[in-house]
Length: 361
Image 1 (cartoon, rainbow, N blue to C red):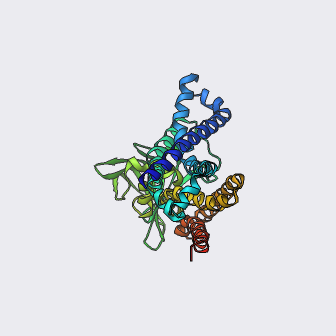
Image 2 (cartoon, rainbow, N blue to C red):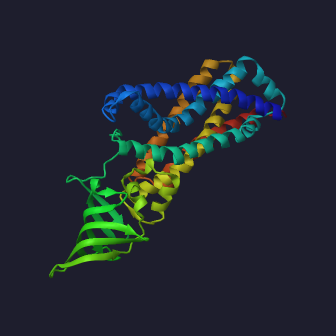
Image 3 (cartoon, helix red, strand yellow):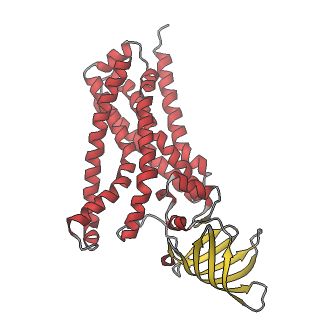
C-alpha cells in the first residue's frame, strides 16, 4: 500500500501548495491595499519598502493559512478521487476510513511540523521586526499601557512601572520599582534613573528608596537588583503571547523572569501553540470521514459544502475557547484542546459507527 500512500500524498501536496500560495497572495494583496501608504512613508518608500513589508508579513499570513489550506486541499483531493472512481476502488480493496487516515499520518506530521516551525521560528522575529520598523498595527491586540501611558511588569514579588518607550535592549530608564513581600505587602517604592544588565546581574543607578511605612527617603548611586531577567528578553515583555515562540511562552509559564500579561494568558497560548500542530491532522480526518459519506450519495458538491462548514465551525469554536482562556473563563489547557477533542471525538464516533454498520456479517 505504499503506492497508495505516495499517490494520495502527491495529489494532496500539489493542491496544498497551490492553495497556500494563491490564498497567501490574495490576502497579502488586501493587506498591502490597506497598509501601503503607511509602508511607503517609511525608509523613503519605494519598491524596496514594499518587498520588505511583504517578507515580514508573510510568516503571519502563512501561519494562519496552513490549517485552512490543509482542509481545502484534503477536500479537493478526495473529491478528485471520488469523481474518477478511485476512492471506490480504495474502499473495495479493503482499506477502511481509518486505514486511509493511518496512511496520511506521515503527511499530518509534516504539516504539523511546518506549522510549528512557522509559528516559532518565523513569526516572532518578523512581528518584532515590523514593530521596530514602525509599521505594525494590530488593533485587535489588547494594549499593555494604562491610561497614563505606563507599562506594568511583574518581576518576582516586585512590580515595575515604566513607559514602554523606556524599555530597550540595553536596559531600562526612568522607572519605579514597588518592592513587595512574598505575601504581596508593599515594602517600599524605589525610583530608578537607569538600569543596566552586566555579567548576569542588573545594576541600578541613581536609586531613591521611599519606605512604605514612612520615614526618610534614602539615596544610592548604584546597587544590585537580583532578578532572573535577561536584557535580551526585555522586548518579549511587550509582545503579545500570540507573537512569542513556544519556548518563550514556556519561560513565562514557568515563572522565570518577569511578565506583563496575566499568567493564564501565557498558559493559554503556550498550550495553543502545541494544539495548532494537531489541527492539520484533524482537518485530514474530517476530509476522509466526510468523503465516505459523500461517496455513497455521489454528491460532490455536498462534500465541499459540508467540509467547509464543519471546518470553519471548528475554527470559530476554537477562537471562542481561546478568547475565554485568555480572559480566564476557561482553564488554559481546556481552552486550547477542547475544540480538538470534541470535533475529533465526534468525527471518529461517526466514522466508527459507519464502519460497524457496513461491516459484512
